[in-house]
Image 1 (tube, rainbow, N blue to C red):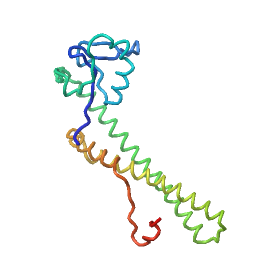
Image 2: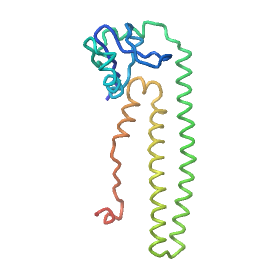
Image 3: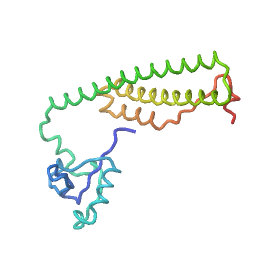
Length: 194
């Protein structure tokens, strides 16, 4: 899969940039000032600007790989300290989020245990039994979402910078997102023959 390609809008010489003070899109000469986003985001901007800012010239959406002076950003000396700070903050945020998910999952597990015990110790009529089933289902869905998010964060953290740079982390992340989770029964197969 590799890393995700970004796109920009160009007429071959100029690009669409963004003026943050005026909060509007402008035409820029310098590729380093061009907006570079995912295709659907660039396409939305392109559609919005087609009849005004981009009415003159042959403007089109191109990948950053196609942009002829793609390396101009790397020509300027980067602020390595700022890059490290951003990376540290993002990794720290993921570690904290993972801890929150772990605490949340423990709480859900305790609620599930309480529901199991209610099922074990009480004889329930149809209405109360159905209510208990709905409570259990809601918690099982919450637990599944929690586990999935925790697994994706774990992929990023264990991949590290190297895995992010070579696209391996994104590939694992996107594969995880697209996978249809299918449960294969271990014993009670008849429950799944509906």
